[in-house]
Length: 362
Image (tube, rainbow, N blue to C red; front, side, top):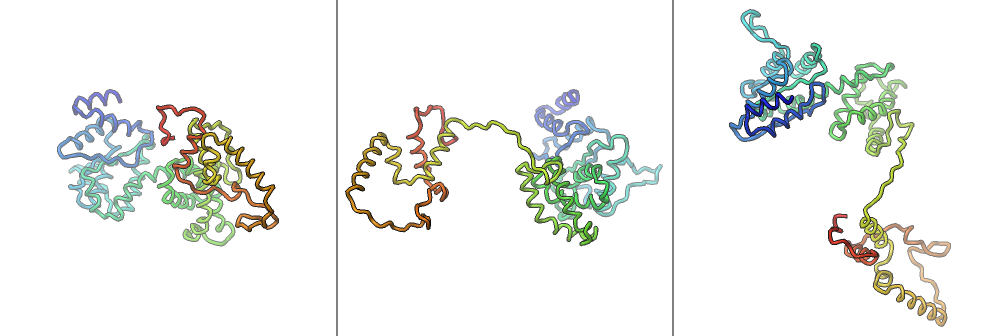
């Protein structure tokens, strides 16, 4: 890879950063790569020439296909060009200009899958390079471009097919995985998490078939059956509560010491005090010399209560029917302005704040 990098940098001066980025994204032949890479820039910067040269140096001819979207003005021509490159079929007078035939998108996907499974390098990545890729939007925009972006799904299904349970039909299982992939792909990119989610929902997916409520072909019924469980499974997945053995066992989370920064702790305490203590008591509790003021207030209150007649209690919304009042902690926190919280923070901090610390970023 270093030799290829050096050679390309000599061929394209000033493009070292872009070359290293592309080589890093491609990685080794067996490594997982991004589903799509979009290269853009002004005209006449050498984008097409650079990518062509890189592919010729890195990959054998049958592992990539270069398609000019202006020349391949119809989807059918583009399909045939890709299949010819992946199978190394070259129309010549000797073979009577024989070429790969493909007329629709469904047939194209099937044949691409077959091409990827040919030869000893079946586990290596294939690349489709589209020059003037913006023209793809003009060729069956509702089907062509989304399908090309989902070609990577074939690898996911191939991996899942190796882990199909013995008591489940393979086609039925792959149909379930395909539905799950379409739903989860936007939120879940981790293959291990997708495995956990799939095998957690699979018993619920096949439950109507096992109990005779539905047939294997009733896909809509089966999907509707697992919808309530799907939301629960996704919530548990993001909370790391799903284990590889299913829902019956909850994930054991290792105890780990979590500590907050010093000023963050004090801000948290100030927020708690501001949310549970009435604002009218802030001056008494947190003002300078508040301890002496509080003692004087209690002394005067006790003396006034001894000399004054008892008043009948006024009913409050916080009163308990059996007598007494609910504590504010039982009623829940209340909203408070940030300025009040910062004022409490300033009064409870024992030392002066370090000048290098920005409190608002805590």
